[in-house]
Amino acid sequence: MTKAVMIQGTGSNVGKSMLVAGLCRAAARRGLSVAPFKPQNMSNNAAVTSDGGEIGRAQALQALACGKPLVVDMNPVLLKPETDVGSQVVVQGKRLCTVKAREYASLKPQLMQAVLESFNRLKSRVDLVIVEGAGSPAEVNLRPGDIANMGFAQAADVPVILAGDIDRGGVIAQIVGTQAVIDDSDAGLIAGFLVNKFRGDPSLFDDGYAMIEKATGWPGFGVLPYFSEAWRLPAEDALDIKNAEREGELKIVCLGLSRIANFDDLDPLAQEPAVSLIMLRAGEAIPGDADVVIIPGSKSTRGDLVFLKEQGWDIDLKAHVRRGGQVLGICGGYQMLGRVVCDPEGIEGPVGDTHGLGLLDVETVMTPDKRLTETHAVHCASGQSFRGYEIHIGRTDGRDCTRSFARVEGRNEGAVSADGRVSGSYLHGMFRDDGFRRAWLAALGVTAGKQGYDATVEAVLDRLADHVERNLDVDSILSVAR
Image (cartoon, rainbow, N blue to C red; front, side, top):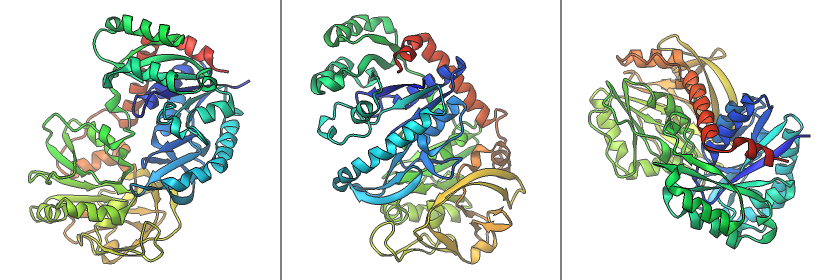
């Protein structure tokens, strides 16, 4: 019979995703068929699945740790924020609707059905499911109708291990306080706790660890030191992207948009020894010595066009191109490079048009259909073939499309300016392809490192599993599953 265990956190960003990835790889190395599951995720960083949908990027990494292909059942509800008060709701890989936060509660009974359906379907295929919660069960104001933490755990009868983050301080209060505010029935599902992100000598926390055990009555499963190689794995949050501390031969600047999406496009570049990658934050000017500026994907192209101009980046970009710099727009970033973005049906917000940057002679019309597909392409400038994926709404056309960025299934894809300095493409994931990345960097005058990106991620996942095995009682964690 398939078993399951759930990792919940005392708050957001306590390291649940990394914990689950490490446990997944550890379980898979024991010969178990294991799969990750997250009932509800909120992220604009999505991955295209083998069954033609989309899930959160964190679950894609966890699936890789399991050695399993991506399927929509691993993350049945994905919320993609479009504004401060509203999100697109993706259910079992497909867009359901866009709702404001206050309206979301009315959807939860319907969504719980989909969550349990996906969970049971996933359970039928594997020996073990490792579930990741979202946010914290201590947010008891959200407990009615909850589908992400204890609401799911109760409905699916899944035991819970609570993870606290000592790096942010107050971990004793985090864990003991969680028990204090949740109801007895929910507390009864918690089989124990662990402490994550410890820096220094873990034995210095022995007394604190014993205090938590005494105060809660829950057994501890260990103290996990901070994993220093976490930055080498795909980032779940754009704030986790580590700016280069080295001076590389090539300086690449990525604009930190307010609704940045699929920013894991940057991860392979961040690991290149010859590259200095900088994620530009709001209020910072584009450096005059930048060689390449990347405008990444966005969940709100028109909204982020306004945001970009508010930072003065439109003026900086034109100066950058005049100096001979290169610009690459990916997906929403490609749409921003054109003359105008039109939204006649109000798909992303109010009906209307927004003037683009005018660096490409193209224009975009937003359309209701989302394109979700894995793609095999050939880069026109280098002749290098590569694999990527598309995940976007909108159609882009114009004179610069005759100079395409790539060819996909016999058709032109993307656009390049007449002087060759500005390029745009809908293709995500291109830099993960080692051959393409080497060719693209070579055209900019630098040599790529010898280590392949996918090989690096696999090796880091193994070291993460080793790290988890050394410091946590993995056998006891897995024995909790039922």
